[in-house]
Amino acid sequence: MARFQLVPIKVSWTVVLTLAHFTYLLFGATIFQMLEREAESNNRNHFQLEKLHFLANYTCLDGAALEKFVILDAWENGVHPSGNSTNPSNWDFCSSFFFAGTVVTTIGYGNLSPSTVSGQVFCVFYALCGIPLNVAFLKQLGKCLTIYLGRLEKGMVSVFPKKALAVSLFFITGSLLFLVIPPLLFSYVEGWTFGEGFYFAFITLSTIGFGDYVVGTDPGKEYISLYRSLAGIWIIFALAWLALTLNMAGRIMEYLIGLTHPGFKKQEVEEDGKSGLIVRPFSIAPESSLYGL
Image (tube, rainbow, N blue to C red; front, side, top):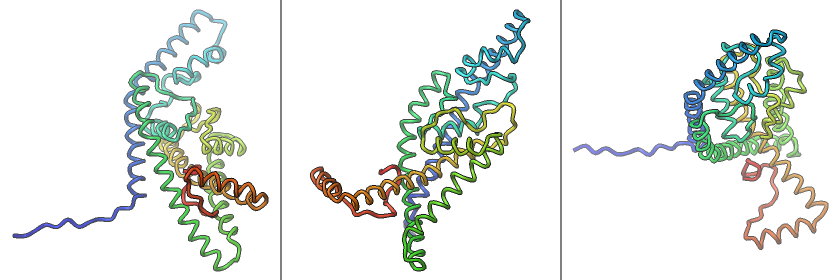
C-alpha cells in the first residue's frame, strides 16, 4: 500500500509577512469601501442640495462665495466643498487602500475618517490588529535592509578601507528612492513646489501626518486609478528605510557620546546591567529597524 509523505517546504518569514500585510490592507480597503462609500455619496448629495437651496434664497451670493462659508462643514463630512456630486469618491478602492495604510502606519492625516458607526467600529478593531502586523512587517523589512547593508559594507570594505562609505551609499540611495524622486513626482502631479513635495514626504514618513498636504485630494485634477495605492506602497517601504536610518543615526550619536564622554557610556552600561538588559557593542548595521524595536 502506497504511503504519502509530507515534504516540508521552507517558506521565508519575510514573504509570509509581506503577503499577510498586503492582504490585510486589501481586506481593509474592501470593507472601508463597502461601509463608507454610500454614506459619502449621501452626504455629498445632501450638501449639494443644501447649497442649491441656499443660493436660491440668497441670490446675492454665487457658488464660489458660498463654498468659502461652508468649507468646514463639508470637510467634516468628508466632502470637498468645491465641485459637484460627480467628483471622484474619497472611498473608492484605491483611496480606501490608501486610508487603510494610513491607519496601520498610524500616520492619520485627519482629512478623511469613517462617518458611519459601523465604519468607526471596524476602524478601531482594524487598527488594533493592523498596527502590530505593520510593526512586525516593518521590523522584518528592516532586518532585510540590514542584511543588504551588511553585504554592501563587506563589498565596500574590500575596495575601500572606511565602512562609512557603505553607510553613505546606503543613505544616498535610499534618499533618492524615497525622499527625492517621489517628491518630484508628487510636485508634478499635484502642482506643488519641490519644497512642498519634500515637506509632505518627510511629514508622512515620520508619521507626524499634519494633513495640510495629502496626495490625490484635489477635485480639479484627474488622477490615474492606482495613484493613491502606489503612494500607499511607497509609504510602507519608505517607512522601513527611514526607521532604519533614524535608528542608525541614534546609534552613531550614542557612539560619539561614548567617545567624548566615557563616563556616560559606563553609567549607561551599569544601568542596563541593573535592569537585566544585554548591552551589545555599537554596530553601524543594527539588527532591528523600527525606532529601536
